[in-house]
Image 1 (cartoon, one colour):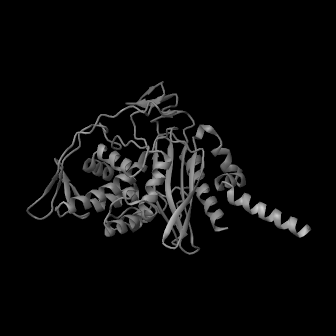
Image 2: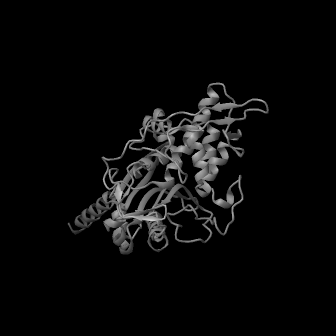
Image 3: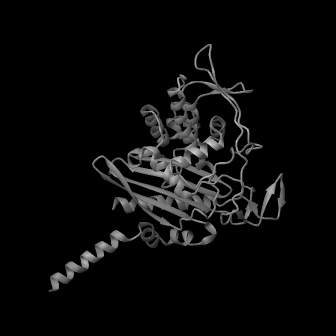
Length: 377
């Protein structure tokens, strides 16, 4: 009888452990993380996915903490991820229509003299989160096409509405791109006029803080994010799933990339600045973890070679976000983890006074390591 009772208690404990939310267990075991995550002023949201492999199939078991698509946060550079993959998808569609364009095909934006190509743009987006590279691909696609394509793939809610860090970032008309398909011919990707941006009035907390700076003057009213990009954590997380694990989704929910472009994209997402094949970056400024916030964001030391992070970060207006798939190739550990945190203690926006180093990067770094240790154990 005593043996049966022990077996029953062990089974009950195993079932409780299996059903427990790992994020809550990790926070309970790390009071310093829990203190920040449970404080509403930091607006923390976390989404974690176990990856379940059975033969050739892949599925996910998702767990979340304070996940709420209606609770607005500024996505910053995380919006570059869907734009990068959609640009590669558009290249395939153009090739299928008979236009010989590839990711290395050079182009210029009409009126400019500096050329680029899609491969370089995608690489710069993931290696150092380059804003100019994103803006060029935004011109290539236009916001209506970006949003429509994401919605068609079941990635919703999302509203990409503007370029990054340029004047008139939300102007409706895109610029013409001239792709030089040979020495003597070019393909014009003509300008389009996108639909006007609608305010995100239905979301919670899209008015933030007590003031903001505009043209070096303090304005004592909340900062209005209602016309800004909107890309909630679960939408970004779902985008990354579709990029890395297309087999887990129906064909109409996948990004339609050539096999070569897909291999290039996945490899590029994990490349460190020092590994970029297109540009040489100063290692003092662009260290390994420059855009790897989870696990490594609070350190400038070299990252372990056996741990690969396929991700996209965002960093602006006091908000830090990382959408990541982390794989330890030596110990056969893998998981997906996405998290966002707002660290703006003075509640003033656009003053470049944010608690990134004191709170934000340490929180994301420790959170990533805590989840990694949980999986390792």
